[in-house]
Image (cartoon, rainbow, N blue to C red; front, side, top):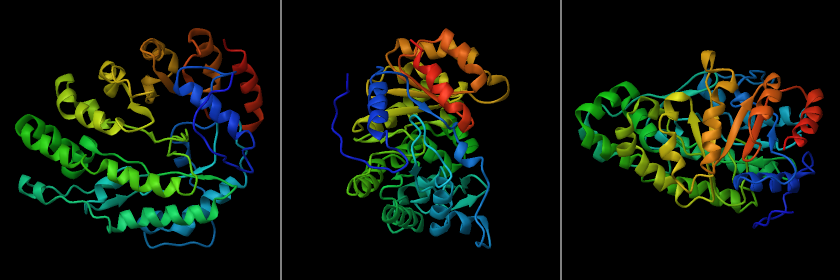
Length: 365
């Protein structure tokens, strides 16, 4: 049975099975399975693990490299030419100036590292909060527009173009103030924190819709760093700062902004970054607008995945789907213990094993 939904033709020379892959994904959004669960042959954040660059480029600092539009697109296209996109792995270029770039739209500067960037806290006193205003002529905003338009000129028939990572709400507030300082603020100045969080959320939809409109005008599905497309509006809400919050503070400072973010979206996949954020999972599972949970289990003693099977089953029982990172060595045990309903697998493995994994997963009932 083919899942019915509003769609248009997306022709990619390296993804001839695009239509059936989207059918599987739309079934997954609804905790259904057509023939097998979706599989992405790439692990969470895998795009940041390869530091191989291109010859012929040089910069004075890391920020110049991040901001070099031609280089970033050339680098992506170079990797694209050597890639095969099996199963629900898609070629997606998404403009990226760092995970806290939303804060930078308000005049905050970012400090660039090899694979990420950090906001330099700028709100030192509460008197500054009333002056916070978004600037659509801000260099960060304009650079993301430039990257988007340039990629759209070059992508036809080759790859999709997505939108950048957007962290509004209390994560943005923490970037304004510094996470440690914001923890103290919650204890000492909760009303001021509420005000800052509200200001850090009020422009979210305007920013999202601005880039979504650009992409939709070029027949691009909605997609970003997770690589899971939607023909509507796909959003990845999250709150990494929640790992430092009590349940009461999560209700006060996070839930209102999350509800606001997800309300007008077609599909929401909530990014649960580790067991600290998972303390608030039951609250998230109550929200009908959230289709799925991306479970990021962490490292060290937070691996292997099998210790989290009870959590995974809890999410399934609530009628939500999941995005799960697995090692190849964990696949058999996972398939034995977990119902495939609502599971999207992310597996980082060599090309020569991918077809065997697809065949194995097709038998998972």
